[in-house]
Image 1 (cartoon, rainbow over the protein chains, first blue to last red):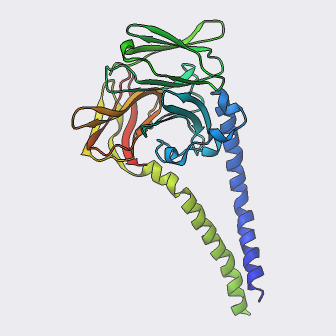
Image 2 (cartoon, each protein chain N blue to C red):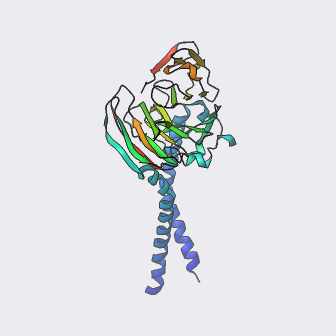
Length: 197
Length: 128
């Protein structure tokens, strides 16, 4: 007769014993998210329902994501762009899902995700030396514009308030040579030369 | 009396095992995603221009990832069809670059250090 209360009591003891470890993890995760919010503006705002990454997309990302912390930062060029920290908080990821079923991922540690260049970028193409089909980026709060230098033209793209950039150049633009980030004063923060191979 | 103590001792143990089992089940997908699949190039040092590939197969919904790179760097991942057409072809400046899609055609998985820097890392495919 007293077995059930004893079993419940014992279970509670085990839960209490494990709780401090979980609490420590929660604190650690919180600090990771605080750092993450500094790298992309969207991570600092309140979450809305459209920020949820669809489950079919989550299954194909290149890292296990903390989906409860994801933000949708842009829509366009037949793609949706998200940012989310990895489940262990060691990475922040840019995730692009396309209507054709492609899911592309680019991750870096929070401290370097957008720190070096002012942005994180995924460039879709049809092979080495071809013109990009899409340029997908997440910028930090300092960046007011990205300048995309193509073989035959130059394009300045303004990020949205979430820090998202989705740009689909025409095939005539040619190969993408470099991407520069520009601050509010118009000064270049950094330039990344895009590889040709 | 001893017979009464046995359930008392067993109960916490059973509860602990049940809890640990549920925790293990909850974390299983994480570890599987971290270690499953085929590492087809590396882990090693990648000089600029070095690439790797995994022979033709059907990588339906497989994630192709160039991961654990030692520095923020350029890298490319792609699938290459038997016709020579490239799909799921992406380059990023990061420490991990990946792509997966629903293409059912035969193709090979490909990755490349297309940076001018040398770094360490590995290329892997795994079911998404």
